[in-house]
Length: 81
Image (cartoon, rainbow, N blue to C red; front, side, top):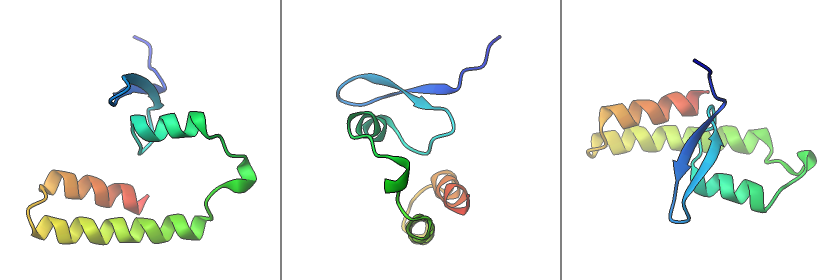
């Protein structure tokens, strides 16, 4: 059995291959392909960390308001990485 480095995600346009370890789906993958940016134009890592903190906090609040523990845990785990 061979392992693949991608997974298939779908949106309103159809299926697309996304890196297996990516935290995004079909629409973001299409954006990456259609609007390529150079390495020097990436988001500053401090902004990425700040957004992860916001996502983590939102997961905790939304868990208290009905978000399933499974989804909240997954969001928090991704934000911690």
